Length: 229
Ligand code: CA
Image 1 (cartoon, rainbow, N blue to C red):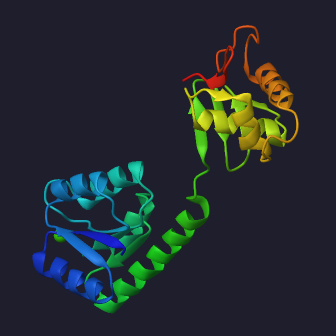
Image 2: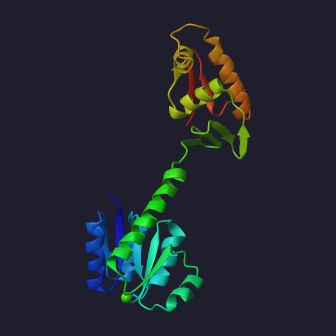
Image 3: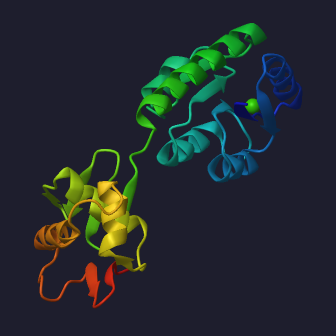
């Protein structure tokens, strides 16, 4: 369930907003002090903030700036004075919307829903993070199937990538050539396990500074290989 934080010093307004939003299916928390509201906004996970501008001590301007410096969560600013809205917009606080008191609860709910939907689309499309494994200077992106050594991208074949990814996913574990062959080439002991040796050699040439003294993929003599953590 989407969770909203209302920061509003007028308790009756905060409660009214809370009631309507809860009726619309949102989980709602309220804070009546700016300081405490800001603290919670930064430390807890909310899906949207409704922020009154005029608050004692830490006001809405400051809270808005501080939230925006750390989070992309939608912020709806609530102002008591209609005339101020243009000025407030001009300040570039990073709020997503502005609403002036008095407003109808249904208007608030409609705006909350619109911003929530937009934000969910945003994180739904770009928020799906690529699966990255990073060990020292070596970084692989499992989603994009790319390998980077420091800033430099290295070109890997499919099997080289699969083999490196498997070893990096299971660092410090020793695997025999047979095990690696089964794991990556996916056929029970058919084929040549020398393929593994060849691929390890090619990977090392791409990622190791010295293939004679590998820092990433170690040879454990008489056993196999392991990715050194
Ligand atoms: Ca106020």
